[in-house]
Amino acid sequence: MPQTPTEPAAAPNRTAREMAQSATQAVGDAMSSSGKKDPEPRWPAIVAVLAVGGLRLALPEGLSLGPAWLLLLVVGIFLVPTVVTLRRKLHKVNQIFGYILTSVITLDMAWSLYRLVAALPSHKQSPLDLLRSAAALWLTNILVFASWYWRLDGGGPNARDLQGVHTDGAFLFPQMTLDQSARVEMGEQCWSPGFIDYLFIAFNTSTAFSPTDCPVLSRWAKVLMMIQALISFATVVLLAARAVNIL
Image (cartoon, rainbow, N blue to C red; front, side):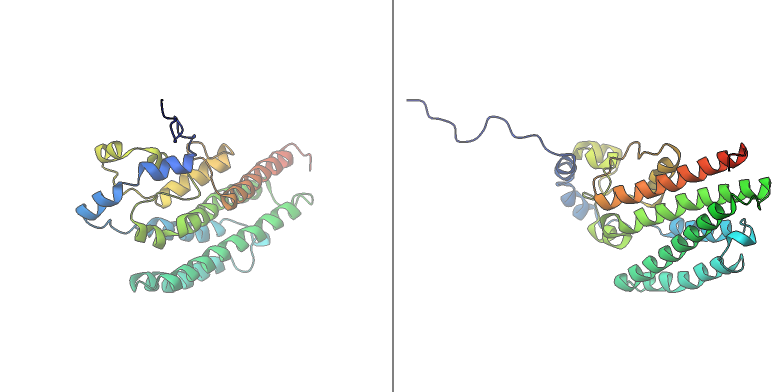
């Protein structure tokens, strides 16, 4: 008498996250045999926050909280302990300073956006100042949210360095869906996202209002991307409305 099979004939469909994890499960052996992956360079993130401070100099006095150079000074002050704690491998303290620094530039951007919206109906800003302010805040929006994605995804850069291989996070990067043979062929056995990858996501969110090649998996990332897209859209719409004298 034929026996009834105890296991189903086909496995259930796997989610995108499970596919990424299964595709990178065997990479750990290759990583341990080839040595530990080099830590992610931090200079792109440092340049980004300094650029936010530099963009503040392009804003008129009415849109700035304090002197135009104040944000750049505050960023420089917080960057010193951030770099020092990173060098000394004080990851928890480094993470705290990173959160504080990113929060400072976020609050400053929010204040400037509020002042820009409040100044539009009064027509106090000249067309050139308005265009320069909108462009500076649009770029600042990209850099600020790229910094948040970089600091939060997968536990942050320090946690990603300790993991070695990025297998799970808020974004499903194309490299995470490759199987082991494809990773080896491309030389991406120990691939992990860097700041430029998150900057690309933030840029696409502000221009195309979508993450394009990286599906979003986590709720916190979806919320942040909605806020970023809303800020970018509102900046463009308000500028266009002012240009045609609707406001």
